[in-house]
Amino acid sequence: MNSKVFVLILCVLFSLSAIESELLDHDETQALIDQFRNYPLNINRATRSDIYQLPYISETAAELIFMRIEEKGEINSLDELVADGILGREEAEALENCVIFSDGQKYIRAGIYDLRFTRRIEKSRAYADSVYLGNRSRFSHKLMVTGGNVSVNALFEKDPGEVHYSDNMKGNLVFTGGLHRIIVGNFSPNSVTGMLQKEGFVMDQYSFSGSKSFHDFLKPSVSTNDYSGYNGAGLYYTFGGARITAYGGVKEISASLNENEEIVSVNLYALTRTLTEIERYHNASHEIFGAGVEGQYLGIRYAAGITEENFDKKLDPAADLREGTAGELSLQKSAGLWKFRADAASDLDRFNMKLNAQLRSKDITTGFFYGYIQKDKFCLSTPGLFMGSGEEEHVYGMKFRIRLNPKLIAISENLLFTSILDGNSTPGGKNSVKLSVSFKNIMIEPSFSYKFSETADKYFLLTREEQYQSGLKVKYENKTVTSSTYITYTDNGNGSNGYLLGSNITSNTGNVKIRIGGDIYFTKEGTTVYSALADIGRFASLTSFSGAGSRSYLMMMYISKRFEIGAGISRTASEDSETVGSGYDLINSDAVHDIEVNFKLNF
Image (cartoon, rainbow, N blue to C red; front, side):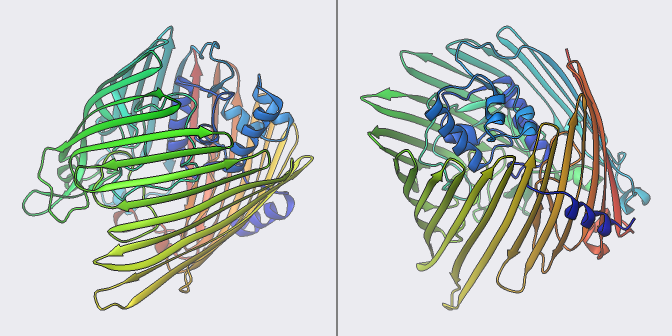
């Protein structure tokens, strides 16, 4: 059957809604699940921000869970959220070992071995011409053993074309007690203000919220991302309502160098599949040392940290990367219905800050914020990018959530910013609105956003960029079946736009799980559209498309208490073969097939 006809039939037959999921790929999602398995979240003590960090939890779901706990009291099982129509069964299944319900509850003590095998059936020119050194399959082995207060985690992974596992081989040993945690091996530092980043900071929708528990300056990390995680040691110790943290580590990175062996930029993900790549990648190292303190004094919650970063090679003066000392401070205070928070970060040269105020009543939550950003001066944490493009920015915004009734919630976010580059001031902004309507077994979520930015060159010629995004998600769910449909449209305002229509159905009967679905997409001028369902692993996650074509997929899995085994296959067809791969990866076919096998053993 023609793939487009197959997908269209699915879209007509299945009533629809997207699984509530972060825009994360399979590996990021699995790494997040593994992290919460080791250190579950007490969902009854969590803020919206805490809940929103869980995998497969949308912004709307985080709001609903938080309100449900505040209004009806603590929950004892995720089944209660499924019964209330807040979570789907698949989301609850994914989060089963990621949350706890009381501080006294024991964490899951278990051993887990996870194997993932993926392969594209069609052979690329790179393998046909023997350009890549290794085979074209991907293998990922994960091992987690937790017992008592000790946890051992390890990852061995080989990407297609790589010869061995040494490029991404990680592990750590974690000792956890009531007042302390010690990590030896791979860990990730975590910015308390969100502003220690290369491109400035992200003014996220929960920037006014702080956790009711301590912030973690560092977390155990065994991620599939080559760049993430440092090898070293870190610890925290809690005493008298305060916590101190210290850490130090180093990682090999893939850097682009100029003719003087100075770092121009850092690659976040780098395969070493050819002789040239092996010579270029992992050619620099990055050291980091840090310390932090957090606690509460006179009703004000505080967290402060200092970090020292160094590279083993010099930095090009024109590079967007910096090294040296950086500090950060966060203060938070609640007063009645109001909550105030102030964050500041500096590398002892430039200074960033953001101020937040939140007013919350039973049915309305309103947040106001202001941020002042000076870019290109901060390295720590993930390289998040805010919307502006200048050297300096002022950001103003307001976010509100209105619950019209228990089944109807409206969320809106409005941002305005001014970018300053070479003394020229240019504006930008973003406006978005999302509705969530639920009744019986159906949830409907329409959404719309508009953002714009203006830039001026040295001749004061103004360029305006705009983007419109709209979408509709509908989900139907009963005890054994979840069916979803979604449609999205993206328009960049310059003749570049894209459409995506997709559908999915998941059946859970006994120990057997089956997912089948597909997408039809069409984009112009390089626009990218995203499907949150087109994944053939155990849990659906993000897949991106550009060009014109379709994708259909089937996944089957058998799940028992002791082990899980599953397999999936997908077919992606493109009308333009040039959109399938590039360079050595180019495949002489308008359609490609990917297979995946997953096996997990609990012991």
